Image 1 (cartoon, rainbow, N blue to C red):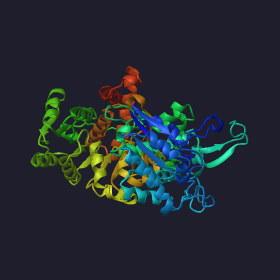
Image 2: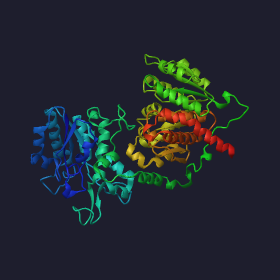
Image 3: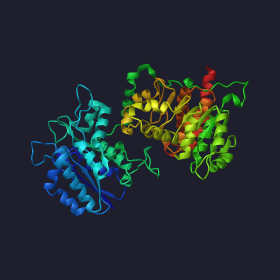
Image 4: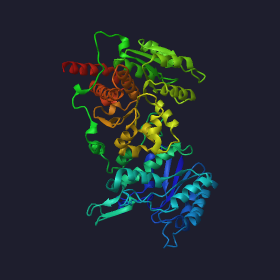
Length: 570
């Protein structure tokens, strides 16, 4: 059993029915930790580092904390009260001295200290429209101390400012105790409090902390689910802010409300935002009687490296069902054997060696042969994979980049400031391309936190595709396809499509449609529709709970046949 001890002020403290709905971050943090991890919330209202120690609260923690435990240290709001000598501390003086005492208390007992900068207050600047910093030098003092003492630090101050900036003045009220008169016994006259949190806010900000902790080696194994794509190694869903709020029985956005928020983002783009009103609007490549397999293009697939043979098969199969004329797959020996058995129509070649290298001549021949390239599903992130990706992007071939290809691109641009990322990514490609990130992958590409990205996906997609040759397919419950100032929404599909391999099928569909003759943008938005409609057909055949990626792939021919019949009728 590992224990997290939380030392802090009212933003982290436990509340009871006499202050409901006020809620502290430490109070709800147990929702985010794995089995076998306990959270003891010793944060207290109104305390600073000084008063917390003076009242013996740190001494109590010192008596209880053990080797292998964790001490989360989150102060600042009350240390700033310079009119109160019982609480005030100077940011680069007694404040950091006191924090160092907390750190030493943990370390001398074999526990791991974690510093957390103070939660930002909700105060919007009328001139700029953004959140105005209210904590002075205190957050910076914590960050400097963390560097000096080599202590992991969660910059909650920055994270909370970014989130409130992204959702705006009105929506951010939902995080704090903004309540009407007559609704809660604790606040009969109502309250507008921009410091203390209600359930929704506590869970949201606790989720931001948990997400950061999941990326720190010392704390990663504390958190329930650590994958940026929403899954841990065992495939269990990350306990996100919405899940936690639901478990508390507090206000959670319904699917209808989430839809409304999503569509509202696109309103300012007017006619630039489209969706298919009728299935007959979905584009398919032209088919002619006087044609041959070469008429429908040659697709090179680089996927399904060691341990991920299924990804190589799923995207290859989908490309064929989309109408692609020829597919050659460059991969490892294991995947070659699978494809020779399961997909004999595909040509294959061994690209990746067991020693971690790759065959440059095989890659050169494949690129010379191909019209288009699909790279990424099950590719891995090795040095060889990075080198192969670089050669593909520079080849001048139209490309679909998916999965690990996107993660490798994120590494290539990882040192670029956020404002330079759109251009830096576009500069990697020598020909038009389609990128197919889910929210976690898009967060890595852009350097924007996933929860912030969701709240501004239209703006981000527009920014990343305006005035360049790239098309982005931003995958989520409502998928947004963006290209050259155009934004297309897909509203088909269902929750059963949230399953391993589903994205591999989509990538293969888009690549197959593009190779067979559609433009990257038309291939992307048509591929997204066909994929979603196939998912709906698979759910009709069984139920959403039971759908596999293979089920989706098997329903693709029926969807394409239906669309083809409609377009022929026109």
